[in-house]
Length: 523
Image (cartoon, rainbow, N blue to C red; front, side, top):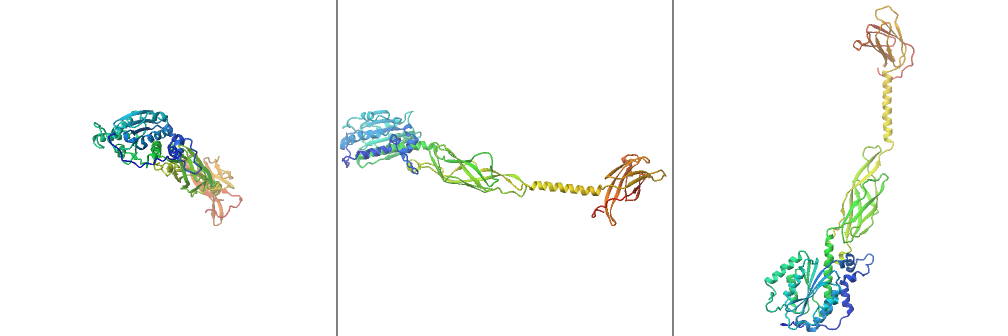
């Protein structure tokens, strides 16, 4: 080794193994799969969320860079790294991909393959550091980016660098300093990988002078520098790096649900019948998420134009991803009838107003590592709610029709009584200038057809009831044509007991007693 790190105050008193193991188990998706469910009403733990998301089936890439320069032998650092790294690897799943590199004067591949057998992976590490080795952090990061640039790389990748010194490359290194064109090239490669991969870096400085750890942040934009107070804290800090990687896995899955929430629709194509002032209907709430459970609280609904009350909605509804829930609600209110009072069916479209807040019980446990963009308002897919009701009087229309019929009938009877009264007496027909015996025509009914044999021709007689100063009387309205043609037809009115000449024929009325007509008739 060509350099030494400043001394680091170490507390070598053994820590409680249970404490270190617990820190790692919180981050482990394998253990989370067996976690007890949260109590009713409480937010679930991250372990339960990861189990629900089946994160153990989602692969992730881990590139672990372990400093094996000579200074790592001081204070048992390298031995602690070997033992702690195994527990970190125990927290990964068989779907994860691990690339383990050691680096001093140059990087060396120790293991590349699937996680799952942490003992085998750790066994690939050398038994002790290279006492004569330098610390080429740039070359180690170059090896990490080469590994992450493979075609089958996972969508989530982490670079974990553990070093106790500063960047001190050997002569001839492509990275003689901690900046320059070679570092710019590394940064561009990392940016290209980050365009299709959720890439994050974790720098774990194992000494107060381990400034080389911070160089990860010069290459990988999303880098966290984890600063354990002593080498004995390494266990929990590595667990923290694993936990953040799992949170990024979860965030990548939950990004599919960004902007998705709860939609509401009014079920059924038929109109709700509110004739009796009440009806039942169904409101369907549907979660549009793929992974995220949602809760709707403070659910309230109203209908306007016409206004109806909506009751029966629960205060809170929990929806699993993609779940639909049909809620039966009660409508109360009536449709206001228009000015038309007869019985009929009114149809209206009311406007649905739905209030409620959409949240997820996962928001608080995943914060601040995963931000869930949950729309808090319910989306209404259908605002128009069809309604119908029978309104108006049941008897009004039949009564109105009956009244009109009676009125028409009464008017017709009155008209017939005036214009077609019953005829009485006889009518004598004779030539106006002749001595022959007249034809005698008896008058009865409301109309008499005239076909006299002695004078010939045709005609008809109808009555007309009139009111006079002497009382009502029935005049005879006579139409007569001597040859039967309409062209020579003549008309005349004969008073009771009177005589008129029409078409050369004398018409003489011989009255006989008849029932007196009613008063108030037209003159």
